[in-house]
Image 1 (tube, rainbow, N blue to C red):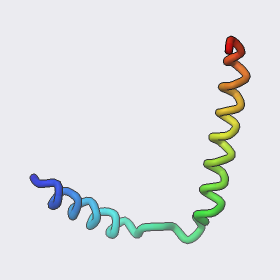
Image 2 (cartoon, one colour):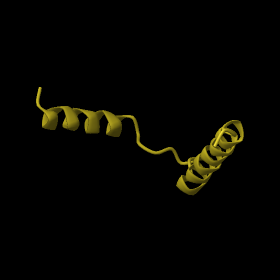
Image 3 (cartoon, helix red, strand yellow):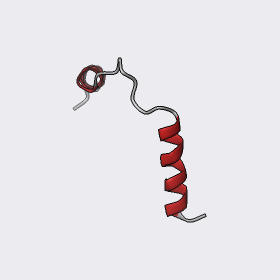
Length: 51
């Protein structure tokens, strides 16, 4: 199986599933992901006090 045929099969599978859901707003999803990553960064820096 070549990379091209595997990619084409994955694209067909993704299109068959319907793609994006109407209730998922990309800005809200990205903002929540950013907030979670910043919280994890803050927690990590609180535990790393030996610097």
